[in-house]
Length: 125
Image 1 (tube, one colour):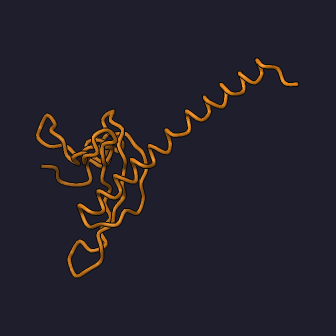
Image 2 (cartoon, one colour):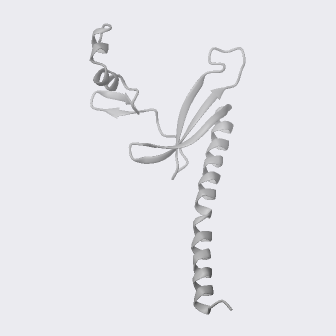
Image 3 (cartoon, helix red, strand yellow):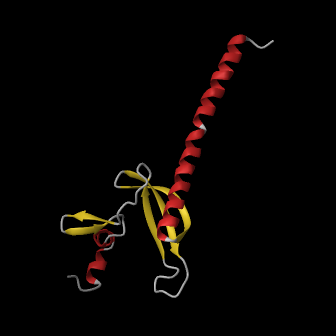
């Protein structure tokens, strides 16, 4: 015969396990909503979706490709960021001390900081 305390502990343990399962499912649903919104709004195909962080905000990073056709940007690939809390796009450029600055590690200043010889590679204006 199994003891009553053992059964209560087992039921509580199962409740804890079950209560933690919906969180990834909810995150997956939110990602699917972001993918659907971007595909419909911009007429693109989402190639890859992953979680990320920009300026301390949790975002969905969606790698998208323009549909084919007879225009210059056909099949062009870009990455769009969608805020996980609001569902809105995160701007690719933000205000900086000297105007607009691209968000993320691909800005010109970061490249020069990582490779000082890049500053000597061309004319800077």
